[in-house]
Image (tube, rainbow, N blue to C red):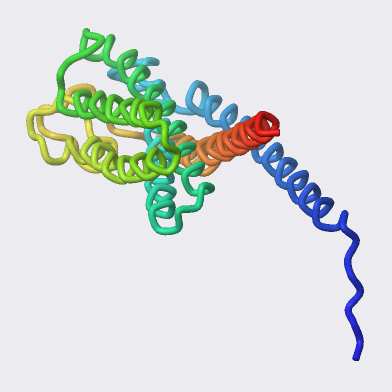
Length: 254
């Protein structure tokens, strides 16, 4: 009967450190790709895409405006998935994923809101109008802002994570409404990017082939690179923060 040789006590920590190093290098590589992708997308938006005959160069904001909302949607859905997984498993890693998704989605939705205001000024001659799409976008941003207030107002960790998970699931309804509002409200002045716009939409335009290419490229970059990379960095920060907090509590208890 043979006995398997015991592994050195340093084997497991070294393996963990190696995995963490490999993951960090992968994240750094993806970050570099995301930065390059953003620059390429920006070049296409500012140079390659044609100038809209009606709106002029201000229409170029459209590529960042729509792409940021696409990335925010990916992030908010990630927050929903993390929240649902936490409720099912009670594992803290899923709460970290949900928190990261909501934070990144909130940041990208702010970009959407502010670029939309910049676009609206020369197009509709106002920074803001209570159009159904703009109103729903503002409600979406405020809804997710309340998510952070909820987390900050509950001291108990388990309860905070549980409530936040439920909130992240319910809040996704505001994202769906923001996306669908121009299709279900005939009184909007906001053009529909995908599909026909309402009859009274103002500032709409027909996209040429280079415009479609630019929009598709930028949306893919924000959805597949920028949003996931930001979420990963936020998870890493959250894990480091929790590690420091655990070490602080341990040092105080000694």
